[in-house]
Image (cartoon, rainbow, N blue to C red; front, side, top):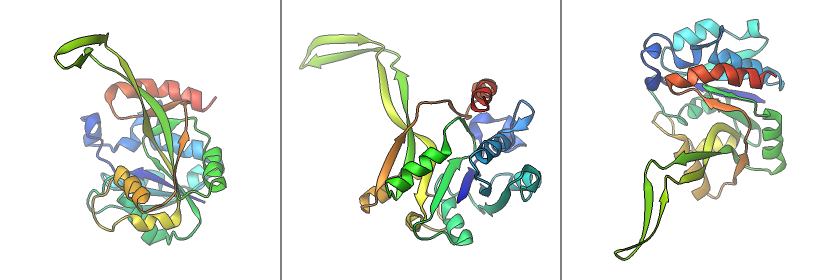
Length: 234
């Protein structure tokens, strides 16, 4: 099966580093983020890759070439203009002819995780889902005391409560026919795709995950990345 790595973003929150280097090529230790992802995918036998590129695409294409030096096969789809988090999947559909019941693994190109990709794909195919979204719990501490009122009377106050939500972990398995929901040549985000799939009656499933996971989106997260790499390669 093919795996699509979404690597076209501008990495705005990692400037000034990303003024000259696309985020997927930022080093963690001695190797770029995207190379670490590819090496991890290889451990699951996932060697047929499509990288969706955009910002500084030529640097990514020059570094990875056809992937043979890493023991994988790489094709590219290139955004002429930014297409959002889901828009590049229209390019994948058009170039690769993705159709029917075949499964397609999709993941963001800035994720370091010890997620077992084989188990996610098996869950997706066993459930005959149209789209499987890997999810995880995210805790957010409210910075203030939260007051509950009945009319104008305060009945309780909770100091800095912690709220736990289920969030998108940036890894997906698609039934390839689901890509027909992605419009061509326009900005389209993954939440839009999920909502449209649900509204269209497609089977959208959640795969809960609580292992090592880091989306490298801010400067301070680069410092955490080495620890996650150690966990994922243990």
